[in-house]
Image 1 (cartoon, one colour):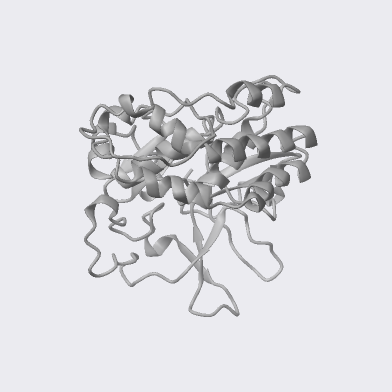
Image 2 (cartoon, rainbow, N blue to C red; image 1 turned 135 degrees about the vertical axis):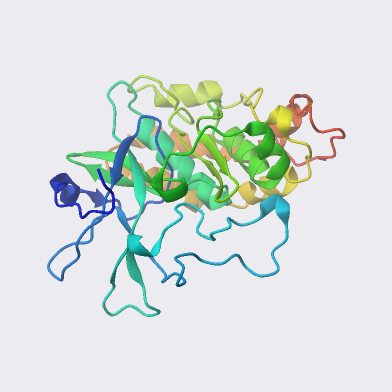
Length: 324
């Protein structure tokens, strides 16, 4: 499909609705949902649109002047997720201040699956946690896909294309700040499924970590969520694939502090949104919040116990960062 065309031949998109309390990341089994939408006064805005500030005349947002930190430099376009061009922008939003336009973005959807009953919850909650930390995870939301709730997230790539597998050696060497953040997130959410296919690194756009369907509850059968959490509660993620390529441990302390600063109320908000939509039973929700809080308190211990796996770090300097 030519994604520059209106979505008149996508009637099902009009039936999508977004969870009002949500914010999250992206899929493993992906359904491509990219479209534009003609906007009139009597139409609702298609959920696959985003509202963004008006861009410059060349369709880009310039890199902030004087920003020279190469370890965490911003994308060259300043946009982070899609290198939008002027012809990708739609109508002016009537009554908006500052010239806000409608914009088309690529997005990916994960439907609920009987074979993996917790996959949508895993992806949504893990992404919400990552966003609260400031880890580079693509923004997403719970969304109604027909009659069932699923998960949708903004695509990461140039001009809507899917990025190639990340070169982990370059990621570790050129973006140690972001790489360290992903490692801390994966320890927190008990994600042992990180690999070069679910993290992207493009020098023009930055870093994105996605596909968290195997984190948290994992792939356990229906009704066994609390038991799965209990089994992995004390288990650190071993042999993280970024380990051999990270050259410094200097960013661990600040990322752990970021994670520990996230309030119980934020964890409740993400988890209990899944209860409100019928995706998660109350006992599982209570167990998940407790699981997240326990691993949050013990992140420093899990990271310190993994120090021998960071073979590229010549001198381990991370001190006592707490734990139970």
